[in-house]
Length: 177
Length: 132
Image (cartoon, rainbow over all chains, first blue to last red; front, side, top):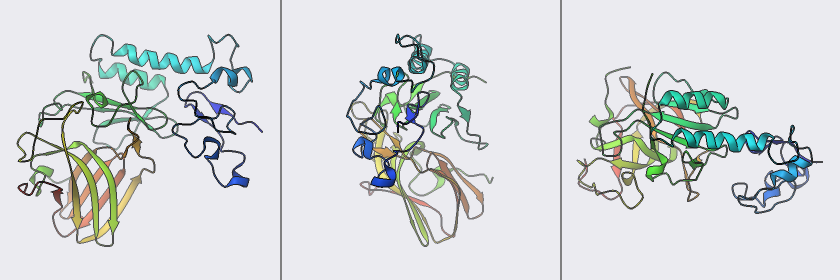
């Protein structure tokens, strides 16, 4: 039995159907779900960035795919990534632009009445955090934003993975109401 | 909330917790310890310029709550963030307040926890004996 794939989150919507037999929900990736993928959700392959999404689309696993590689949900995902990158192309964007982007992605604010603005996706992953600048130490003076992808990995606005200590983990923005 | 500034606590005068990283949380019967990769400000005795490709001066230490009588989690995360070196962390300490005389609120990606303890929390750096 094939598995259903959610292109909005780059995740399968169901666990490995072999779970009952193997007892291992990530066995399809060789127990390495961060680095390995499985186009059918059944057998592992360390595909890196070359996930054959088109193969899934052609098999009808991603609704709406036309087969020419120019439409479909995976392209929508890539497009949204480019849209985010573009917001930073002319320098620090306003927080209001990032809030609009978050809304367009279906992210909602985690409102605890205090602390930074945190936006979570429909799976509860904290995708974006907006913080106000602080004069306490060099590097903290700017209003800033940090991002994570659907797998909880720290990324910069271009979608590239970053280390937590690096300046790329906090990108300057302009905080507006 | 009571008027409270975490920099008044021992060991936190020159630490910037908001962009520090919680690496682990150890819970014992009367003690809870946050393992922290802390951001030091230039006034800290162990401050050094940030390393290559580092935003701040980081140094590891423990934020310790002792003589605890109650711990209440109102939210708790199960998935850490993962960085480009595949190292996990639980984000910064976004909120650290004293909500009642001996009750503290500590909040971040790791969750939100109220800790009641009869002694003041302390922060101890691993390799900085001159820090107070």
